[in-house]
Amino acid sequence: MLGIVVSPGAPGRERLGQLEEPSRREDQLLVKTLALGVCGTDREILQGRYGWPPPGRDWLVLGHESLGRVAVAPEGADFAVGDLVAGIVRRADPDPCVCCIRGEFDMCRNNGYRERGIKELDGYGAEWVTLEPEFAVKVDPSLGSLGVLTEPTSVVAKAWERIDRIKHRACPPLARALITGAGPIGLLAALLGVQRGLEVHILDRVREGPKPELAQLLGASYHSGTVADACQAADPDVVLECTGVPELVVDAVRVTPPATVACLLGVSSRGRALNADVGTLNNDFVLGNDVVFGSVNANRRHFAAAADALAAAEPEWLARLITRRVSLAEWRQALGKRDSEIKTVIDFTLDEQ
Image (cartoon, rainbow, N blue to C red; front, side, top):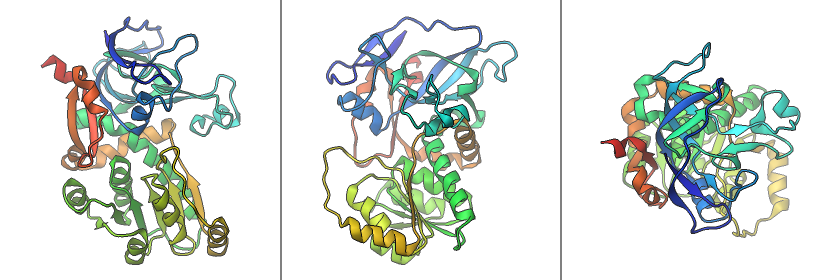
């Protein structure tokens, strides 16, 4: 079978290679890959800046945003042949921490976790993969290929779960949300905010094209000025920072109203320095009773919530998030980032047509 093979830490050695078909245990699902989403983590792995191969070798099968169809299911499992599934990315540390023991492996405290397609476990970027049923989540068949959005949606589902827990004990009601960044994570975060009945505002530098249109279709307000301007217009109770751009990160926690919850979802580019008055930031947090936290990855509960959120969304709106599809044979094209794009997907079914 074909698979996307990379060598973490050694850029330039990536290739579409022939791999042995996976050896399935009796308790595993055999899944035919239909689509693979691409994100910044995949690009960093190709650049040699991130990623770890499985022990004992120097290569890794890429891909963590998956959609597949069950070809073989173990007897007694809650899966049937033909089910659409998304694979959970993270696995608990073999020497589990207290969070891993409780099933909250996305919150692993000792960094011994493993991740499909990222850290020590082969990813989903091959024509066939195996999955343990406990790490597979059913996707509503009505979603079809849009189920490939499950993994990025799981990340924002986790963020919203944590926000809900924090605001449950806070003074201001959760009524207005500001999302900085209208990429896939930002727009999906906005979708879940709208599904919660919130007034949603989106800030992005792009002034025309699909991003403002998708915000309008969602019923959200769209801004293209500064974070301060957007905060003045939105008066948010919660901010989800989805870009990782250092200047926006600082502004997202500095210019917000008092008692705001700020969730940081974007990963910043390495090597970028930014001068900031930490004392002033500290005073703003303390005197404003602010909450600032980071969130990444997801466990099974969040993947299930993501699948539910996608099933409840307008399919036409979701379809517009995917702005480019390429075949497996053209997988390299998917790793190039274009400003006008939102989400790029490697569609394994295109090679079959």
